[in-house]
Amino acid sequence: MELFRIRKDIPFMKHAIVLNAVSAITFVLAVFFLVTRGLALSVEFTGGTVMEVAYEQPADLESVRKVIEGLGYAEVPVQNFGTSQDVLLVLPAKAGQSSGQQSEAVLAALKAQNPAVTLRRTEFVGPQVGQELVEHGLMALGLVIVGIMIYLAIRFEWKYAVSAIIANLHDVVIILGFFAFFQWEFSLAVLAAVLAVLGYSVNESVVIFDRIRETFRRQRKMNTVQIIDHAITSTISRTIITHASTQIMVLAMLLFGGPTLHYFAMALTIGILFGIYSSVFVAAAIAMWLGIKREDLIKGPVKTTSGSGDDPNDGAVV
Image (cartoon, rainbow, N blue to C red; front, side, top):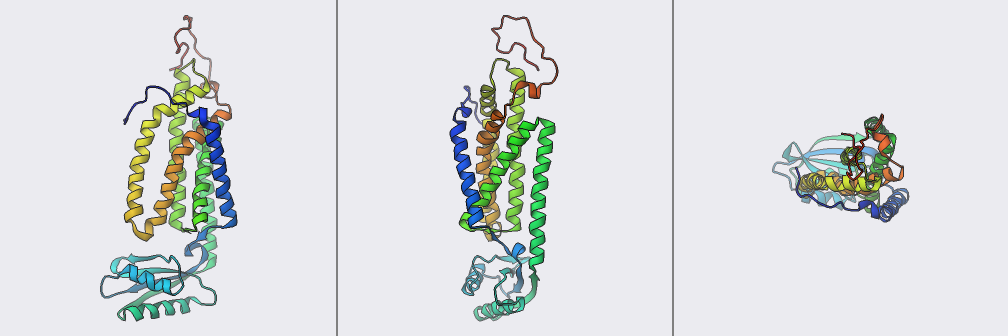
């Protein structure tokens, strides 16, 4: 399916150096913010208290959130749990207070606003559990990266695997850089979004690499730069359709999903936008600089013809 067809190839690789310089600067800034500011880890990673309270009538989450903020907790997740009368609160650990003292103080403040509120349960997430989640999250990220590299190395060639992984890490680090700069809460949901972006971004790179391989086989008189430009131009309509439809869904979560899905959708939005950029200007450009050539993808002797040489597809392999 094509939204539109471009007759003349767009010279994307002509601007590869400038655009990759922009990518490098953005990447360095993201690393700088990660190192200097760090991530605002959620209670799943740092440890804290989980409370479930119940109201007789549907709870006003905004008023509950204001009460919690009045106790000195910034951006605490407040959401319905099961029904509109049940509310789940996730409180980060507070210096000088135990989990029991935190829950008592919060319950007293909520009762001052609405005496009918009752405590259903309270749980404490220790820092040891948070440390395990960090380790398991990093392990999951590493396994995804290794799996993608193995797949691309088998499907194409090692140069394509290296360029795709660099482009994917470019997207991931920039997402983390945004969260570090704005100090947005980094939760398990955001980690899931980062892993989703890894798979989503590599899909676009695979489509472009597939078209590069196909063009190498069909167009004998094109050089590598022309082949890459042709591959990207011929897939640009599909790229726009795929990313636009996905972004519409993510935008719906961002606008209407509430606080629970806000940062999850935000991470996906950043990943989708930079995923388009990295697939075209990072993955393809790095593959070009690594020296991809026809012989990398076409094994065995190349069939030639005794034509006059005027046909640009003389000797093409189909």
